[in-house]
Image (cartoon, rainbow, N blue to C red; front, side, top):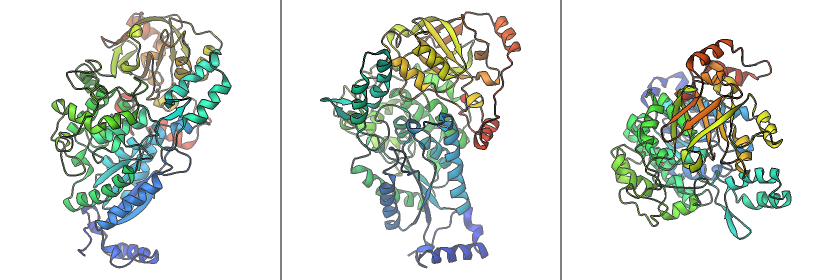
Length: 557
């Protein structure tokens, strides 16, 4: 057995500190031979309250098996793993505060213990980007294993995806679907463990982790119940040891070209709009600061939409996997990707995917036969969004690609929802819900309002939703979010008033109110709104005081 390969960062440790650590390890039952091995953190976000993570303990064991076989010493450590769909008391904690916390937790575990490498295990919305941010920040050999999606369940003889369940809430409210039938749907529709099996934030992030080169090939489209996932964990354990031996670190993988590949892929698969928060944040941690929204916008005009997965089309993740999965998409994207980007298995993106089989060309389209000639995500700009606003254009009905409507302003999602249920929101309305951005309300989502309206036949394709907060990755309809700068820091969305006319033109990437700039400036001068932190707990206060703007990824200052 070779002597343990000490990482550059930990060469200083020989002496009292080193001896003490060795003694502590002996006390836990490790042998003198084991403590000479490279130390590898298995960073697990397992917990018993998250369906996307509840199975990760078994995956972690396979990772540790691979690490041991390859000559390393694995240590399982944990991070927060919140499921957005499970948060009932206070949705303020999800996505951005929890994402940034996850990155900090990994940093604390890795930097304080001076691990030689790490394998990151996660599945869900905020955890995957948080761990990738940490990988870029710590810059040691790192590989990610994503935990897979929940396969669609069978309900009354047909497949049922989770976005259909949430959208049915509006039908129950309208009275067009019975509560008893809905309860049966909810019970039958949740098949087992795994992330939401739709092109929402969790699964989108898993896809992008692979496109970035941070997972082994094919990981993204394996479901959580598939035997291949355990094998993927085992191989990842061996692969990280190769990275340690060769000195390949996270920033050797997460390069500017890798981020560009990820953005191109996100557009091509019509991924979650939340990736416009997460990819700039990952890039920031890798020292790759630029206006990434501009690059998103540039590519949204050039990159075609190649894969349509629910909620944008009828196809499921499992059908996509059977058609050729993520590797098939990357194969078809190679002409517009940087194929020379390195990945965690030591091969390039091109080498990993150029010979990938594709079994269904209706599901995995080619560049010359796309679903649409432009991508599934668009960046809009205008007098209420000078730094940008985001819409999942693939999920917008053709009738709403050009929209003019009358504004109704709300400062609370609940107030907007109550008016919706009371019948006070009508076709042609543009519902503005503001002060939900990172500074205003911790990056709160307007998901519940959007999903309720999505189930109302009379409104789902006739009302616009505009916010400086977030949306779910499964958002559909004319739902425009992430407006920057946000209203809480003086963005012009704060100047919008009831009765203003809003004009939205998705093909031309514009969003404006029919009011002069002089009037907007005068209104802003009169705005007195300030966030109330009186009843906010310390973690969220720290977040508000330290977070940057949405367009910069809502990272730490």
